[in-house]
Length: 165
Image (cartoon, rainbow, N blue to C red):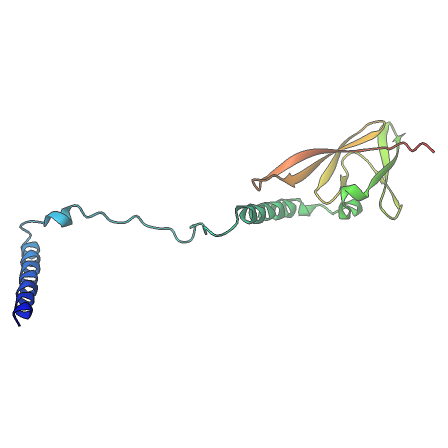
């Protein structure tokens, strides 16, 4: 019984102290010491909060795919050429000749169907534009994704291969 009465006295003292603090705050006389050091938490932007469990590579790939789609939408005002359906590795440079003073090349696909290309034509799935044709090489500029997910221009060339039989 004595333990219970001491517990009741402590609880009542705590209630009395809390009510005294609220009364002092209501009067505006003094702010308790703990309340004067109170700091508000910063606002959190939950819409742009990064998921700590998501893969960095997946995030970069999706960002890069979005950028690539945006670039393709920008280029969509032009008609896509037949050779843009093929991967550059499946195309083979067969011949280069001069026609009307400029170099023109013949490229074969994997079914050995030939296509005539000039400077300014597009080849390959990465928007590869032919920049220059020399006596044995076609130089193109492709738009590809770097590891950071940005679109960069990459220099690529197709060269004629001599076959000695």
